[in-house]
Amino acid sequence: MRQVEQADWFKFRSVDFSQLDSLERCLDEFARRTLDGVLIRQVYPAEYMREISARIERHEPPFPIFPWTVPPAVARKNKHLYGITLVAADHCLPEYFNVAEGFRSHCHELFRDGADYEERMKSIFSVLSGGRPVSLPRSPDGQGYMPATIRILPTGATIELHCDNNLSHHPSYAHLKTVCDVNNQLSFFLTLNAPGAGGELVVYERRWSDNDDAPSEYVVSKDSSMVEDREWISIKPQPGDMILFAGGRIYHRVAATQGASPRYTIGGFLANGLDGKSLYYWS
Ligand SMILES: O=C(O)CCC(=O)C(=O)O
Image 1 (cartoon, rainbow, N blue to C red):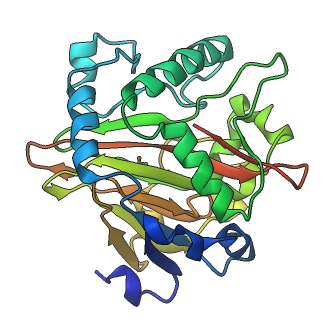
Image 2 (spheres, helix red, strand yellow; image 1 turned 30 degrees about the vertical axis):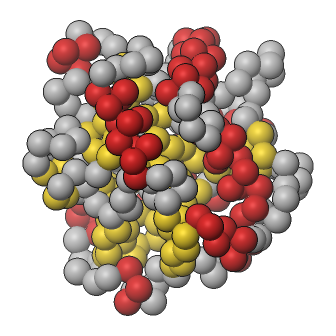
């Protein structure tokens, strides 16, 4: 395994939140493909992340738990989400938008005594884009998309190999495709709790190609044979650190969580508006 600094195929920068200005306009570099990932350390203090994680553990506020086809106690034993992703909503977009509205107010409540999560993400994206307006996409009838999902990986849970450009094949992306450039989307997440071992983000040298997907086929995860002979590196952001990377075009996965402490992250995706001016974030 290589350290992130040693991989010339993964162009990476790491800065403290206090030096955020040094990343001004770095989204242009992502667009030119001269940058693949940035780690912004201590976007929130680690101590505050412990408090947020304790609230998540207590399920306070009571976010909807996905999957909801099984009882919550069963869902909680495996990988689960607070909130729902656009692809998981499948053909039930009214439900997605309902959940989104509730999620936003629960999320304000979760961060009630610190910097508001959405506001902090928007202010970071604004700097990274050189001051472009940052918005949540809205459905044709004005409903807001999910701003993020909270991902919970108990012991042994993983996020399997995928590349997020594949998401846009899903029918539920039909409207979003008319708003922003989903084929160059970036992924971001803030680490709330890191497990003692495991839970690293693993990124592969292999880049996405349209030919990797059966015509317009969305799949939850890709076969690991696609990357078995490829170089890879792993990155483990600590609580309070936020990572933004070119997850749309770089194959990646999350390694199995080990030990009693679960992995909690909150995040989503970011893309340029087709109007050439705005930036949009969603999950
Ligand atoms: O660790 C996470 O929260 C998700 C990482 C990931 O697979 C993604 O952002 O696409």
